[in-house]
Every structure is written in C-alpha cells, then in structure tokens.
Amino acid sequence: MKDMLLAILGIIVAWAVWGFFTNDFSTPLLFGTILAISVGFSIGKKDKGKEITNH
Image (cartoon, rainbow, N blue to C red):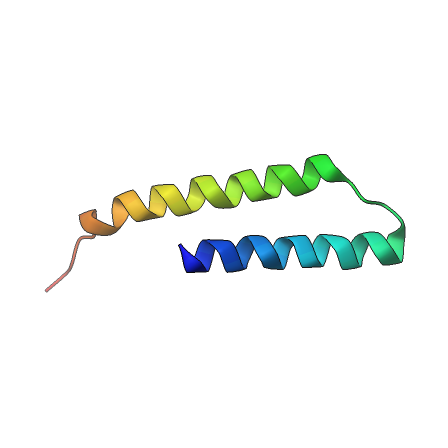
C-alpha cells in the first residue's frame, strides 16, 4: 500500500512540475495514470500468491 501511495505521489509531483514548465495541466492524463497504477497494483497484489517457482 505504501508503494502505491508513493507512486501516486510521484506521478502528481511529476505532473505538477511538467505542467509548470509547459503550462499544460492535463487532468485526464493525470487521472488516467493514477487509475492505471491502482489497477496494476491491485492485479499484482492478487497474482502475488500465484507465483510459479522453477526448481
């Protein structure tokens, strides 16, 4: 959970810095990226127990 929150915080900071320099604060891109991170983390969390180990 901590990793996901740090990733979202990093995306928000990068979005703010990029928007400051380019004067383009595209909120749909921000929300789409945050949604993609959330979905990816939830899928990864579910599949974590299903890892296949090769011996």
